[in-house]
Amino acid sequence: MPSQEDLRFATRYESHYGNRVFRCYANRPASVMAMLEAAIESAADEEALVCDVKRLSYLQLGRNVDTLAANLTAFGVQAGDRVALLLGNGPEFLIVLFAALRLGAIAVPLNTREQRSGLEYSLDDCTASVLVYDAELADKVPAAESIPAVRHRFVVGGADRQATPFADLLKPAEAALPPVAADEEDTTVILYTSGTTGRPKGVELTHLGIVHSTMHFEQAMRLR
Image 1 (cartoon, rainbow, N blue to C red):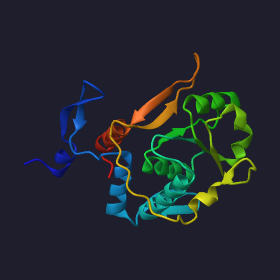
Image 2: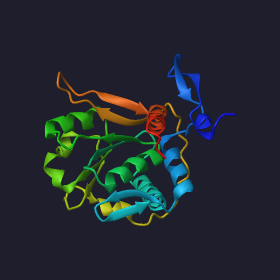
Image 3: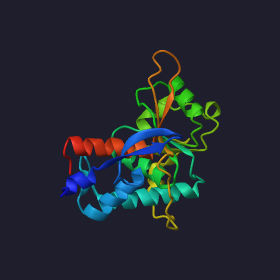
Image 4: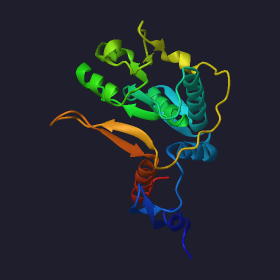
């Protein structure tokens, strides 16, 4: 009789992205957000995030994500919009990324070591409508006229008169958000290449791809 692990990682062949056939995990989450929701349901009070002295349980992380997503909606952010992250490793990165996915938007993490000209190109190329950035990186943020698609800027960990404080996005929201159903072939993240031989290229990652990458690590490294 198959073990629970065998059933968990059972595979089958499926057709995706047109007529391309892949070997897929049969019992997989429907989206990246579904992975977070499953973790909240099964381990609500366990630690999800530890950064210096700050610690968030899965339930607290989920609540922060929901609040941020609801407040982004109030700024007009919706499914399909690009939300750019010029953030270092910290709680805000994870919260913003999941909040974008919560709305059906597309997260665009940017290299914090990139220079202003490179950031300008990437932001313009992906037509990001929102930029969330660390205050210490404010001098790298392109001028408003060079990235006209960016409608809203939010600054983390400091002040910038060109941006709204990120803390405002974590204030209690007026209304709860309805669930957003994502197709697993939808783009969820755009990553830009280094551009060493030309202009950086935006690589689109889907829910399907990220879920499978996560499950591959889980299976191969016996993570729990």
